[in-house]
Image 1 (cartoon, rainbow, N blue to C red):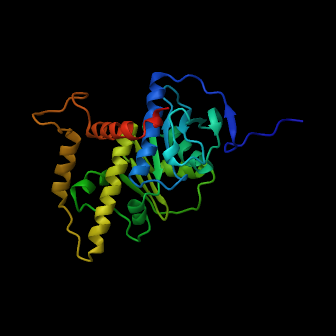
Image 2 (image 1 turned 30 degrees about the vertical axis):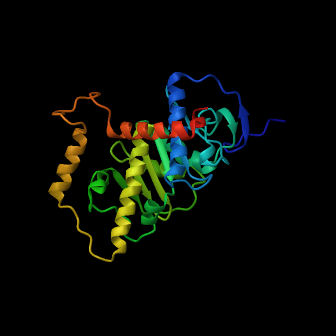
Image 3 (image 1 turned 60 degrees about the horizontal axis):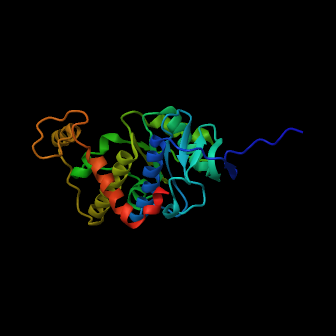
Length: 275
């Protein structure tokens, strides 16, 4: 009698190999992102999912076992999950919606090495509105709006990979933030530092916009020429005093500096995330 097919969401145990330096670094960054998300109020207990593609592979991503609170996530405890739903390494259960959303995005958009899906309150509140667009009413917003795409077609729970493929089709190299109507948001990045910094900025922008809306007074939008000017200044990356031009690799990006600062705090308060 043939063995039953393995479910991509079944609890399993697979021997974990020694990690390469690149994978260990990716694991520590992803574990840190989960811990920091709890600090910043981006989490929803054991639900939602943050993932990173496994360095050196094009067929797998890292994901915490389903059932862990985000404050419990550690580098070594992350599962290695194939884009086909197979558990490659680690011990635990694969959350079905995490597989169905994240595997297609990682597979179809390798430029999005990190995929963060949350129901963080302020951004998610905007997804509940009839007019759910983030408007260019402030500096933080105007640095994000060109990266945003909106999914206005809520289709129910993500229980099949086809839903992830539908969401992946909305993203692209220049679109790194996806608002999911009636649901939550997806934020991507080339690195965990970049993605988390974008996630942090997005939630703050949504928070401030909702606060402004709650006053009941008209919003004052930034004129289009100034939006373009600020975006060009941001792309130039001139953050440090004395910089005249920005050469690739010349200075750390603000996202890297921000995430490194957060990691230093985490190293002092919750160093076990690296275990």
